[in-house]
Length: 270
Ligand code: NAD
Image (tube, protein in one colour):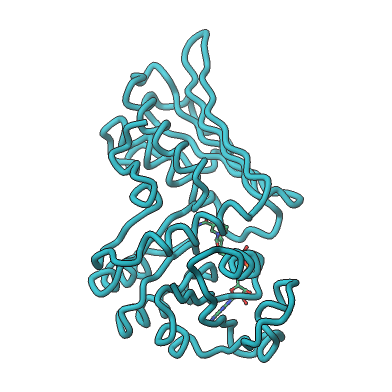
């Protein structure tokens, strides 16, 4: 499978280049960066700290989508909307790891999924997706006597909060309880908030250092507390999951999928 990487000089982009080059059944179709980026024209593999591969970084996403069987996108939300249009134009499979999309950007991505398979995941790690499934299961098993709080921590460069993964965990908990997340979510408490409301799901975000990603889902009852935790020690787990998703997408019908589909966990039964 020929795989292209957008944002190939970024933190995840470089990791993805390495993963594609070292995975059987994959070859690198090319890589892009934003217009004016300092790495334009440089060798893609060399920029990722490897021996040169003979492919230069360009800012021509249109040509990358035309040349690739699948494109993996970990860039920024406004740019992924443009990339979704190239998926629509060329029918190229899209593996979408970028987080922080607004409603209209999500609508563009959903529209493009009518033309090619798109795997969109807030977190491509296998372990986190098992955490999603466990959270949904536990939230459905424990009643509202158990308060659900989600705490996440990421490195100081992260620009959006709470993380897409934390929001996904909150959605999994809401799905498990059969409630609309929008009606029960408490984001970023501050000041005189009043007592906690029964049945609400709380979210808290910590930022600092070089933390790759930590997520805790706490079920706090009276006299007992259950905590589900995931700690990402390296970004490699996201790159491995994204390349696994790209290979899985080969031969799939157009549609919007997530990592639970890739892992066969979409029923939420853990
Ligand atoms: P980063 O800033 O290091 O990399 C983003 C790259 O995109 C940069 O190199 C930037 O120059 C490039 N870019 C910007 N505009 C572009 C354009 N028009 N065309 C091509 N490239 C362009 O960020 P990062 O830490 O690699 O994270 C990127 C995204 O991936 C973020 O949204 C982050 O939250 C998300 N992420 C998701 C997962 C997951 O598993 N889903 C895991 C880690 C990070």
